[in-house]
Structures are given as structure tokens and as C-alpha cells.
Amino acid sequence: MIYLDNAATTLHKPKEVQEAVIAAFGQMGNSGRGASEPALKALGTVYDAREALARLFHAENASEIVFTANSTEALNIAIKGILDPGDHVITTVLEHNSVLRPLYECRRKGVEMTILTCDEYANISYEEMEKAVRKNTRAIICTHASNMTGNMISLESVGKIAAKYGILFIVDASQTAGVWEIDVQKYGISVLCFTGHKGLMGPQGTGGMYVKSGVKIRPLLSGGSGIDSYNMHHTSQMPEALEAGTLNGHGIAGLRAALSFLEREGMERLRKRELELMRRFYNGVAEIPNVKVYGDFRTDRRAAIVSLNIGDYDSAEISDELSGRYGIVTRPGAHCAPLMHEALGTKIQGAVRFSFSHYNTEEEIDEAIRAVKELAEE
Amino acid sequence: MKKREKKIVITFHTTTDAMAMERYCKKRKEPGRLIPVPGTISAGCGLAWCVLPQEREHLLKVMEEGDITPQAVHECML
Image (cartoon, rainbow over all chains, first blue to last red; front, top):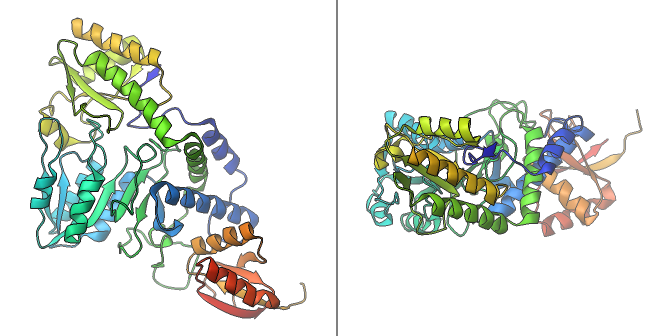
């Protein structure tokens, strides 16, 4: 099998991630629930992971890192916990449904929404973004990289607009956390939502959010926190304010190991490798007659994703052929990014997404190129 | 049960803050350990840092240097 669906989840993880999860079973109690040795072992592991994430994203301190099950949960907490009826929010057609659907829910409750469209390369305009700012604009919410095209949005450009108008800046870093440098202080990010199982190479069921000190978010959940139990209200102290209930301690142990791996190996080196592989694939398929590639490949400042179509074939059909005949795993369809597909005119056809990892090899890429060529010629 | 002695118990706003204290003190080889918050301070669970009375001033100074803010500092018979 050649696994090229790393934008959905990275299949190959560092060995130490698996070992850390296994070791956590039988050693870790419930984080923050008492001072027994197993409970403190869990709390220490969770704390170390918070610190590693704070270092990764350049947060001021570990208390600005909140754990969630995934990006979707983090984005729901941020969007529903910040916006009020009457607020205006700016977002883009690049977004995943984990941004769009919570926003649509808010819109039904009276939040106004501007959705920025894109150009032929699937990029947004920062001038249009600034023009969209209104008196009641509360936040700009955007992805760092499209999960369909791999195109990136400049955090620096958006951060400047947010700072200029005193607007909150909420980022979906699902495709870039653990791959691209994200400095929350430099870019003026208010909330950064991430998942643990993609570029960070941790277990599924891990994720979280950076919340800048002072940014107030209404919690989605209340309940057990391990502190102040006779208070009728859940604690308002961060990060526990947004972490009601038992954390995924075993998963977070794996995530912590993944973060150690990233620190040791160097994010830049790993990113360079996966972008080399992406470029090799792009160069191999872009000129094949009947193949149409989506997105902006004039730059390597992007996520390692190449989405394409062959003629007017249904993307599901192509993906199925790639899997059945060549053992190549890709993702067809809409990729939970409906507005991106509408903007690119691929709503009916979908697109076949190839997404790469530094664990892939040149041989795998060449085999995928060969497969696309053969299918395009048939 | 062991004989009770006077101890200094430092509480925190969150368990994350309590663990930050533990990691900080462990790294600097400072005295003390995490304990469950005694019921005489709060019946609501949580973690606290416990040291001997003679270590109080030194530890508070160390915490200030490390920018660690306690919720409260108590004297308890433990």
C-alpha cells in the first residue's frame, strides 16, 4: 500500500508515539484527580505536552494551551464561545466544515458573516479582507492552509488586519500544526485550533487550542475539573475552564512523544522533505494531458497536497481505481470543504487529493505518477 | 496515623499551576511535594504544595523568581 492521504491523518507515526501510548496504560491515573503517584504521572505528562505545545507555537505559558479531542472541537469551542448575536465575522471559501458549520449555527442566531471568495489560483485577497471589516466585526476566522488545494493564507497579513482594527484572530491550523512555524505572538493570533493526529503525528483523539491570555471564551462543557468541587460553577481559570471531564491522557502521552520527536528531528527538515516529494509528484502530473491540478504551485509555501482530476471522471471512480489497481490511498470527493469546491467548479466531480508525508519515498511518488499517467491515457 | 505537625500548604488556582510548581521546584531541587488540598483549607479537591514551616520564606522567594503565583498560603497541622 502507498499511503497518500496524510491530510486526513498521518498513518505512519514515530515508533516512540506508539510506545508512549502503550506505556501510559498501566502507569497513568487521571490527570488532576488527586495526588497519588499514577494521578501525578498523568498530570505531569499532560503538563509536559502543554509546555511542548507552548514552545512550538511560541505561547507565553503552558496555561494558554487547552486540550480537546480534535480541531473540530477546538473550533466549536472558539466560535460558539466567542461570538454573540449582532457580531460580524469574516471567513473564507477555503474553510473546512469544522469552521463553516459552527459559523452557520451562529448565523442562525444572529451573527453576520462575510465569506471571502478566491481567485483562479484559489487564493484570497487581503485587500478584500480589509474592506470587509465593519464596525461590529468581532473576529476573522480562517484556515492556515486549505485541506483541498494546500494553499496557505498568510498569518502575517491577516494578523496585521486584525491588529489594525482590534479584531480577534482565530486560526484553523489543522493542516499546518507540526509542519509550519506558527508564532502566535508574532502574528497576533487570539486562538489557534489544532489537531494532534496530522502533522503533529500524535494519536487520533488528541488536539487542542492556544488561547491568548485575556481572551474570554464561554465553555461548551462544564463538569469535573478536579478543583473547587462544591462550587456550582465550573472554574473560570484557564486552561481547566475549557477542559471539563477527563482528558485523553493516554493519547496526550503519545502526542507528547510526537512533540519530542519533532523537536529532535526538526520541523523544517521534515517539512522540506515532504514538500520535495509533493513537488516531485506535481512536476510528474501537471503536464499530463487531461489532468487538471488545483491550487497555487508557484510557491512551496504551502501544505504538501496535490488535488487533481482526470478529464470529467468522477473523482471517486479515479480514487477507487488508484486503490484497487495500484494500492494507492487517496481521498476523493468534497474533503468537507464545500465552498472551496464550489469556487473551483468541482462540486459534482469532486477532486482526487494526494497528500504527502516525509515518510513517503521517491519510489512511491513515481509509482503514483505512473498510475495517474496510465489512468489519464485510458 | 502519624503525629500531626505544622506545615505550610500553598494552593493554586488550577492543577496546571500546581504541576507548573512541581516541575519548577523539581528542576531547581527545591523542597516540598504535591499533596491533595487538605479539607481544612477547602473541601473542593485540588492539589497543593506542602513544605516545612522553616522553608516558607525561601520558597515564596523562589516562587516569585519563577513568576509562580499562589492562590493562597496556609499554615496547617498535617
